[in-house]
Amino acid sequence: MATPDARQLKGLEQLLAAARYAEAESLARALLVRFPEHGFAWSALGAALLRTGRAAQALEPMRIAASLAPHDSRPHHALGNALRSLGHLDEAVASQARAVQIQPSHAKAWFGLANAQRDLGRLDEAVAAYRRSLAEDPNLAKACLNLGNALQELGRFAEAQQSYRRALGIQPDWPAALFNLHSALLCTDEPVAAIACLHQAVSLNPGDPTFRFFLGVLLDHIGQPGAAEPHWRMLESGPAVGRARLDAWRYLKSSARAAAPRLLASSVQTFQLAVHAAAREGLVLEFGVRHGKSIRQIAAMVGQPVHGFDSFAGLPEAWHREPKGSYSTQGRIPNVPENVSLHVGWFDHTLPRFLIEHPGGVRLLNIDCDIYSSTKTVLDLLAPRIMPGSVIVFDEYIGNEFWRQDEFKAFQEAVDEHGWQYEYLGYSFATKQVVVRILAT
Ligand SMILES: C[S@@+](CC[C@H](N)C(=O)[O-])C[C@H]1O[C@@H](n2cnc3c(N)ncnc32)[C@H](O)[C@@H]1O
Image (spheres, rainbow, N blue to C red):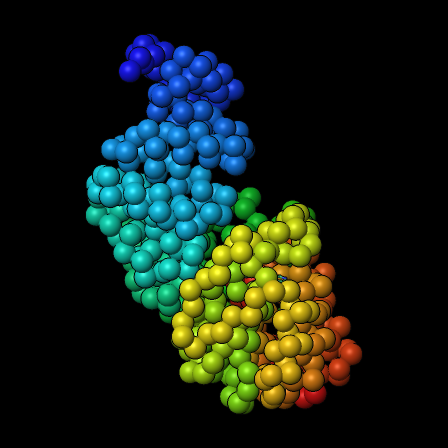
């Protein structure tokens, strides 16, 4: 087979390494006219397209590169990364699995496999793959970080802390690892150690509004509101998202009843609190299932049937900066535990039918459909089933820039319309969730 000369290939490699993607694309295309079977030229074209924001166009050259190299793990790994960036998670898993089959010591392919598995909510498999990537390359700091995140999502907080600490051992002064360690420490009720992590993150990155906000919340939480003030002042004159978080924090503080709501730092903690508080009998429902991450967490805790509702076609309309169709699984229905039934379609079609067949009030409701209109549909249709003692978890209630226009707005309108009394039991700016208990209807 004719191949480009070594000098041209070196040149292509150097253009990519120097991020000169337009030139790399031109050279790769020119080489492919003469050498259409050359795998590296296809790989380089794919990489140039991917890195210039054309992931969908990159897939075809990357697929060709992978098919031309059945014994080289790298093009399969690169294809897997591109597929994941486009949300084609099953195919991403398959490509990374192929890469590690070809080269079992390919640490980054194990890492890529774990990332795609984690996106799919296959957390145990992801943990195993992250561990394998670290066995192959003990210095892969981002594998430690993401392993920590997967362990945290599994509620294995002490192990998550260990993993973040290991990440910091490899890459000291890493703000993201310090931030995640602070969350895991809060989950084991260690606010002082969590504050130390945030102080370090703030000193590394004094202009970052996220670190300052979380530090301010924690300082206030442990009874040092004065120490939070300088952080609030900085947030007040900073970017919109910081101001919106502060607004949500002040709102939550002002609406607290006798007992202050619990500060939560992970979705497992949120659902544990919600399930424990949801003492009445009744339906357990989730709106917004996607790959099934949260419904698996809930199903493992409630000891009864759970019903999940989703179109699996993503958001039915644009959500601020996110386009219509975001969070689609491209129609793929996730695997779910035995006690979960899925109701596929738009809520305004599936829920009325469901309610005819399922009498009774709501025990626990997880609303994770992000936008105002979907939340309003759910609350309007379910209103007659919301009872004193019903518990509602909202997922995008606080913490984003437009929080007052989305789930919060739909819930407040329902409260006004139906005269519900309620209390906030817990909140988490890390996950943007709140737990609400209905007191009277
Ligand atoms: C953020 S995702 C849910 C995430 C999920 N709970 C998890 O644990 O990863 C939001 C989901 O809501 C669904 N959705 C939003 N509005 C909907 C509607 N009106 N009818 C059906 N599904 C809807 C989307 O298809 C999307 O899968």
